[in-house]
Image (cartoon, rainbow, N blue to C red; front, side, top):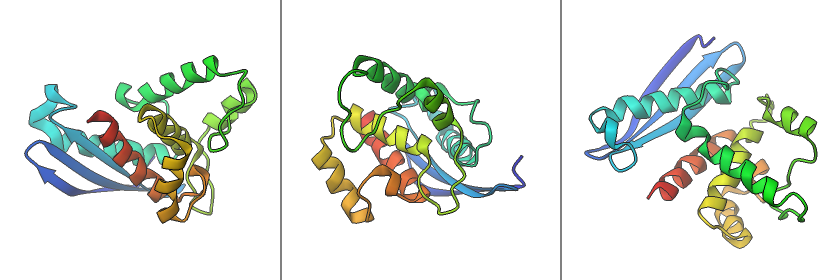
Length: 176
């Protein structure tokens, strides 16, 4: 379980909130960003800060491998879409940016939290980035242009923090 959790409001407007959370546990320090907007979260429009904070803390905990099994529907809708897409393209050659899983055993292994010491993006983050760019209809060239300023050739080359920020940005773009 987390030993400490801290949050900070990064951006607050009448209809939009961004909160960053940092959690520390025996596994290390992890951060996550959460957003909430009136447009996306109309039913909870009076609680945007709390909603963004909850999302940020949950994301930071999941990056640390805590509570991965407890996820809000909006956080995993991209996983179902990606899985459906995988089934439809199982016999096709995958794009070079997005290597697909070869077997169900490998898929189960990939879904486990990765604790890389080098601070690289987790496999869950890479899957989220893949799904979000797919939903935004990004081409390989678009993705390369997006990754170049981050000194990365693929999503796997990103740092956890860069991947988290990119996920937040893409979520906002896809939701618009």
